[in-house]
Image 1: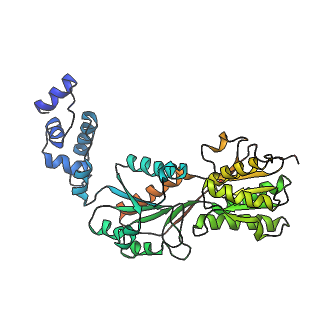
Image 2: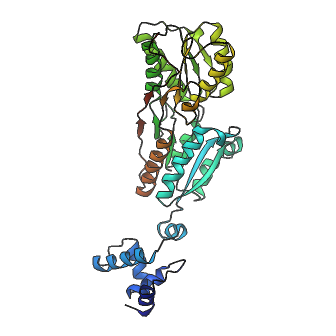
Image 3: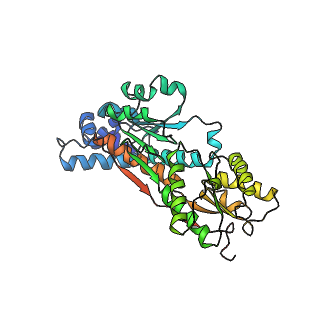
Length: 351
């Protein structure tokens, strides 16, 4: 063992940045041998490789992303595309989604490149240029719409891409989402089991597939339980609190006694409209939301809602994307994560 390494071991000294040269001196081999061993090259004997790996751990060696990228012709960077929505990071849904993506990327030693799906992003085909210029190894899109069919070009050129929280029904692009259909179904079925008779729906924008699937779940629950579907009991809330407020004011005039709001933000707006009308939750109108955002349990009364795996979808999406990128195999998959009803006090089982 060379003197340099021995001295570091004896004194307990640790350099701020440990290099492969330090490891080579510590073990008594060449830097080329260290580099090959750390990349698991079969040319290096197992015993030597294990000594080098043990030394790297002991000295606190951390390979730089740039160095790894040069060896494997990778950038270790993933692009995350989000919709061009005003004050998007104030919304808990997107904050949780991005957190899931970021946390999983960090654990794998990847960097995050944040992109906004602006008009320029689409018109100038930046979604392709990022790959062609070797700026990224893969791309994730959170919050896409049914109009984003242009994204099929990414897979047509053989690049790793995953939708998180959405999908395109007629185009086979890999995706990870929660069970939106079941969410709408169990929310509506719960309201029926509570004894509510005139159940309204505040839906998100129907150019978003999650809203469409939640709507379908709502209709199926009504049909299975002998309730006719009344289109007059459906109002659009555009996934916003203000949209939920305006939609609920219209539904109150139609004498609904319960409402399934397609997300917790719209449910929060519905609360405001109900209280302003002098009505009580859940005695006069029961309310169920969807997502189970942190604010749901803080409402008065606490909101019954469907827990949607927002954070988990981001993490699973990253795992799948990195697997495709590192194996160099682009494969189609549908990953649908489970949802569950969280019963609180905005619905009553005694009516």
